[in-house]
Image 1: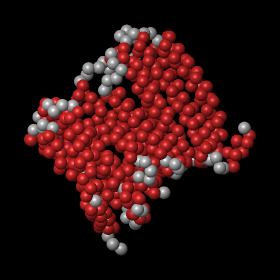
Image 2: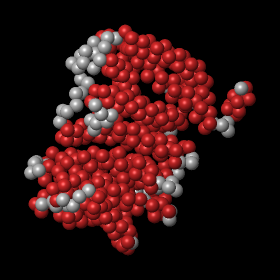
Image 3: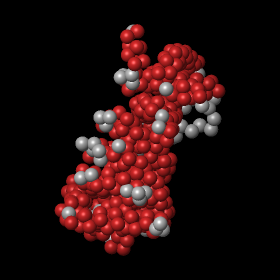
Image 4: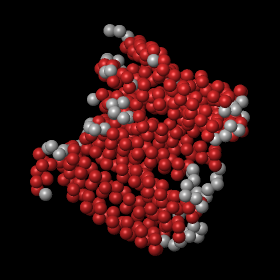
Length: 229
Length: 244
């Protein structure tokens, strides 16, 4: 019998690569959340004011809320197509633990949404009058915060993917759970702009990442079993 | 354990709960009358807030219950998920609308109290905000349950969400508190007197007991009809319905 540890690891890698490849083949779907992110951010100067001090004041909240909404809209892609063509059922039947498979899918989802949103965020930060030397804090909070968004979101998608109209319901289920991440993420950027220490918020964001990394895949796996029943 | 299994059978539950609900309901009514009388007529007016403080006899027990019901709902949902007990799922899903109502009641009474005290219906105070988020969590659970056509899947899915919510409640609570102190400072006079006078404490505790019994009575009553609907194809339900 093969070493179990290495087989679990190879299952994770196999799923991760498969989902990444699928995402890269669907370029349009890959770009949609990013375009959404850019459009939502650019609505705020148009709706509020183009005055740089005002923009700087709202920048952390606007960037974080927009990133959160862009992630929310992209969540369904974690399981939707696999659920519809039946491959999710096959994955659940495999002898590999379902939480590991979930982890592979969520990791691929984050690489194709959260990571790209993070890479795009400095440009949007500049457009909202953020000074160059504060963009690092924005990138740092997003890179620690967005994986948590994908992880918590995967629970919601697993619960709603079997429903015909799960979209708005997903927002209702997931947004309240996103509130702590929004609070710490936006306030860290806010404090960085005010030249204050942001280590505290980053620690808390990291703590939430570790917590969701350990618990969310199990909750998602249980939810998938209910959906696939 | 034997008793537990007997009680957990839908038929026995329906029978036993049928006897219990009127007693719980009657006790609720008596405690509410006594508690409101002591609170509204016997307890003295507050030296600072005058008569309007009396809303705490509704507001505070409702706020306590909003969390208590959430915890019982999540506990019941966990029992249902782990040991596959149908009745536990029924109790959990019957609790959700009751808990949401307590939360809404706490928010409305808080806002009614806030108008004369703070001069505004709503402030983004830490406790108000976490109560509002709690209401969102309840609404999410109820919406998820309602979205499933098959009752069993709905119960399980909403149950998972309730359990996930339990882990998040303390995180949400503390993050909101932290956010609040950061953004607002102590601009609002919080209701945190060093000690509460006995003449106010007693009606408050009586009202809390009344709300607790009210929850017990309504959750059992709701669960009874839910069980009846769920088991509508079994013989005992048909026998029961014919007797009516």
